[in-house]
Amino acid sequence: MTKTRKTMFLQEVIETDSFGEPCEPVTRVAIGAVFKNPLAGRFERDLSQLFEIGAELGERLAKQAVALLGAAPVSYGKAAIVGTSGDMEHGGAVIHPRLGAPMRAACGGGEAVIMSKVKIGAVGASIDLPLGHKDNPWSFDHFDTMTLCVPDGPAPDEIVMFLAYADRGRPIPRCGKGPK
Image (tube, rainbow, N blue to C red; front, side, top):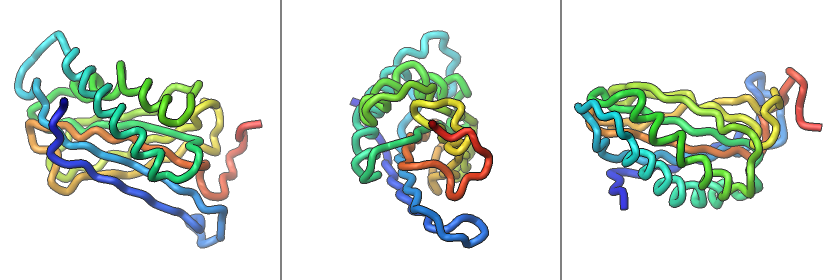
C-alpha cells in the first residue's frame, strides 16, 4: 500500500459568475495526495511501480471525491506536480496508464479522455487542473480549471497527485456546443 504523507480535500461551490451574476451552483471537488517518489533522482525506463501507485490511489481517492461532491459527476480531470528531483514522466506514469479506470468507475462511466496536466514544481507550486465533460469531449461549456497547490509540497523527492470532479460546467457558459 502506498504511504501518503498527506491527503487534502477541497470542495468549492460557485454561486455567481465572475461578473457577480447569480448562477446555478457549480460544485467542484479535488483531492490531492502527497507521497514519496520512489524514482526521485534516478533515471529508470521501467515506470511500472508509479503506474501501480496511480491505480491504488485512484481506487482509494476517487470514491471519496465523488462522495464529497454530493451529486452525479458531470466532468473530471487529473494532474500531478513532481518534485524537483523527479521527472515529468514520473507524474505521467502516476496519472495516465492506471488512474483513469478507478476515476471512471467512481463516477459511473465516462466516454471522454480524462483531461490532465503534469509539471515539475518546487514546494508550494500550483497547477491548473483541467476539467472536461466525462462523456462529451466537445462540450465547450465544461472546459474548466481548478488551480490547486499543497503549501508544503511537493518536496524534491515527492509527487502530488490530484483528481477532481464537478457536477456541472462553468458558471453561465457562453461559448456554446454544450451536450445535446
